[in-house]
Image: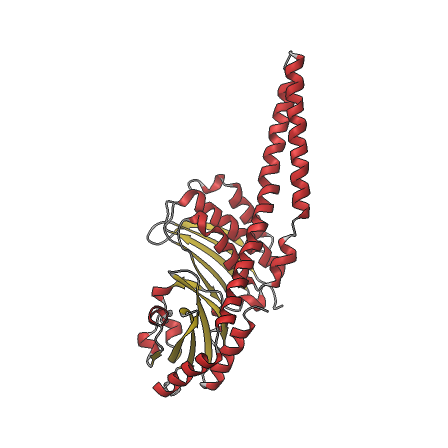
Length: 350
């Protein structure tokens, strides 16, 4: 399993340093990092978070490669205030592959415990250096690339089925109707031949679709947070900006497969709407499980969706919410832009 080695190294480091929690953060690109793995309080529910490097306490480590001791995290940390208050101190060391800092390993202690000392930071850096992480980092990159390819294949298949085939069918029907009003037999035969060609093309496309493995066979092998990240990765070129993603609560362990499938479909449609209409320079995705309520929020700083009542995509998203006793809302975001919020009843634990 890709990433298993990183998880083992992280847990060994946490126990060796007598920490309460640990995180592995990897570069997603030049400007963002992703939480690849987490263990212990606070950390486990952060797996999948995609954030700007500049907003992370690990930024100096990623930029300089120097280990970092954060002795007073509530004052120096970058997490939300309610999270910072629960953390005492953190030690962070670089993860290096081919002489390039590709990520960081952080081990933390909760508030109330003795702060880490410089010697413990040195020990952690030495442990990671002796262990070596190049192969594990490559495995994590390959896992994310494979997830993105599965998502892109799924998106192409769905677009062929939901849009291209329907457009070809409509064009064929229009030509067929027009042919009945053509008096010239030769021209009528030419138009009818084109209708037959469109039908043949549709049949070939249907055959291609049936030969493509469905996302239901590929994607669920990955946890929901990683599937969400794959969708965001796939849509990023169309968005023309670098989205961020935040998870809250036990999303991975609690959300039922049928609800997860609808959440993924809603996220695809929401990001497609942003790409087509919003002209946004920032997009933020949040997936939060609070009690028995699962909420997906997609927030952009663009110019809005126009008339939301006219969007068939929004109607589909609303239907996906109603069947889980939920709802969909679209409103203005603080500071401008649009916030789409999809909330449903999450059901029981898996």
